[in-house]
Amino acid sequence: MVHVKRPGNAARTSKRALRRALVYLGIIAMALWAVFPFFWMILISLKERIFTYDPSVWIFTPTFESYISVFTQKSFGKYLLNSGIVAVCASALALLIGTIAAYGFSRFKFKRNALFLFILLSIRMVPSIAIVIPLFILARIIGVLDTHILLIVCYLLFNVPFTVWMMKGFFDDIPRELEEAAQVDGCTGLQSLWRVILPVAVPGLVATAIFCIISSWNEFVFALFLTSIKSVTTPTIVQTFLSVVGVAWGEMSAVGTVATLPVLLFAMIVQKHMIRGLSFGSVKG
Image (cartoon, rainbow, N blue to C red):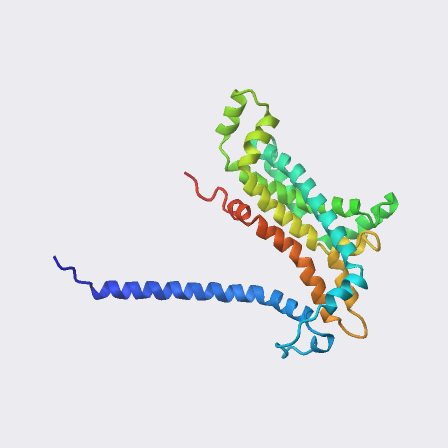
């Protein structure tokens, strides 16, 4: 028996192929739009100072003069260390506090549950500039101004509510039967959380940790107003390259490139867990 290919099928196939090609072109265009600023920043950081003001120069001999300058003259390594300490400590504490709180909100229904969650979300939405002055006065009275502890506590104000809301969604998608089975075997509530629930929620923990670290690493307002010498972080030193003489584009781009790499590398290392975390619970059997 001979099958004859109908013209309508061929037209539908060509339309489908054209639609797929347009989707791929759109994705490529969006990727280029997102990556080009980072590429341009790296390009400027590798130019000699005389070429940094000329965007038409694409072919040149790369130089690491800007990178050497920021590490030797600006003590950039110290600022990177400060950012790392504050970001890691704030994210770890936010995960510890927020995960336990999220588990409580997910598994135990109590009076005004939704109200407390809304209050947490409201704290997360408060602009940093609205509370930085009262925090500055309070920190000066207590004597913790320009310290790592102060920045960590300030970052917890925003990371803990975010962690609670993120992790509550993950815990809601984990069947309660897993905990009930663990408790039948003799586990307490905390033991079932530690041994059963958290291993299942690892993708969610990784995704939440990445967002907390990025938020803490890039935070500018608190670091600008609450630090001066000892605990200055990476984002605040960018302003030092602005002066009445001009803008040191090479050094500024070098700082931006180096400051972006740690978070980028961390996200690449845990990329598999992050993708699983972002899609966790989207497909239910």
